[in-house]
Length: 424
Ligand SMILES: Cc1ncc(COP(=O)(O)O)c(C=O)c1O
Image (cartoon, rainbow, N blue to C red; front, side, top):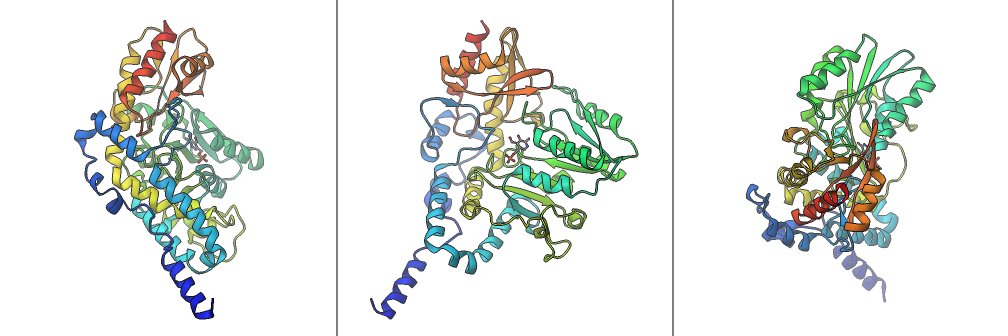
């Protein structure tokens, strides 16, 4: 091959390998699905059966009702991810040194559009825990400052605050919120009772991982922010499961992940910091090159898994196709479908607020009186092939049930049969 042929060959290779900008193009690949995710489909099992066949490849050996850990990628997103791994490996550092910067700008724009904030207020992290740690360790909390946590917050965030308690002498106050609150005021009153002039920060888990309870984050922020208290939000489960934008929360600091309900490959999260508060976080990782107020200053943690980041536009495209409002309605329908009936089964207690749609969505949990929760989990799996997970809730253990979009009411019926069988 002479030099001209070689250069021509290289040109063709790069022309046929456009990097980013979506391997999965719903507008061309799945045209017939666009615009079909309408309210009349929420209860249309035939539609969701076809949807599953088209978009998901999951094991037929068991019914997975433990989608709270991470979200199975849809087939187009998974294929895009594989392609991205291959492309990066083929083009290696040339791509990273010459093109990735521009692609990353585009990815950030898309994330900003999806989450309803400016891309300059967002930073990609490896997961929600990392995003939340950047917030928790970055806040100016000192000896005697008080923070309010909820007994059901995620353990990693509680532990991050406990570390500050040991290192800096901050004071942690832990409140309890009823499993089924009467109204938002009841929740607000629990926080009010714990707030003192020394309170600097309240951690709120938007959707509690143990029960699925949705907390009234905006009302908490509206009430306590004017008193100079930072309300920081762990939105690991609400992001891309329920319909809201980050700016709706009226909170300056939010951590999420992209591998749960957003459906990206495992290993990506997102930090949101309101523009004028970026300078108030002390970087956890050494950085002296970026200016104060540049969110990238908080993310000097080295190279991320680039193919995972490159797949974000594909995951976004999938969510855009399904539309978050319909995703939320369908997931809530599946949850209500089983919790409504389970509530009437003798010895069964549903530990999720289910009657008010604003208080829960896909996630719900239950317990069977007189039975060890481990035995319920293993009974469901061994006798009914239903996979769920145990969660430790304050003074009791519960079974957490989390359907995703590829689940259907027939599978919920199998779960209900299993619950009846074990409770009898
Ligand atoms: C409420 C909540 N916050 C944070 C996390 C941690 O997410 P990640 O694994 O992305 O750090 C989880 C994980 O299940 C969670 O349920």
